[in-house]
Image (tube, rainbow, N blue to C red; front, side, top):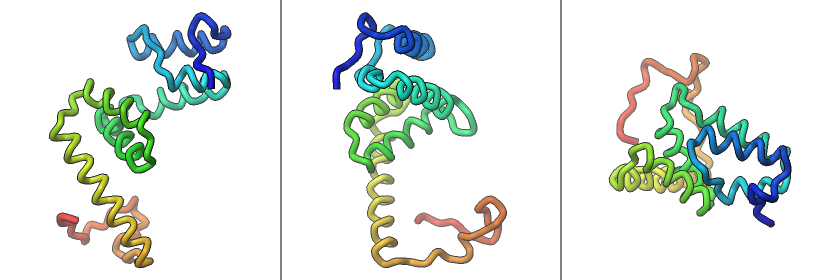
Length: 142
């Protein structure tokens, strides 16, 4: 796909690029946005969704970036890993945090495959109508 540069962009694409620059306080548009700008509707929809989902909320911005790295690693997306790793570093992630995150991602992938392969039935204690909380359940390491 052709990367759509600002100078070559339609007014609709320029509007998204302008908002992206303002929100992110940057003068740079990365290749992801330039690639999906080939479909201005997808560009706008994706940017609006990203702004909403990645905004501070019950989860802080660093936690959201760490989750994004974890999912991107599991989905084998080198571009997303690099992009969100840079964002996480800007928000305070250090090498120790990244190493621990990768250990959790690796462990989750291993145990997910084991439980899937063994077709393990979900324990009744994990099925709770009260928002997934069971006050009688003890949580230990693992």
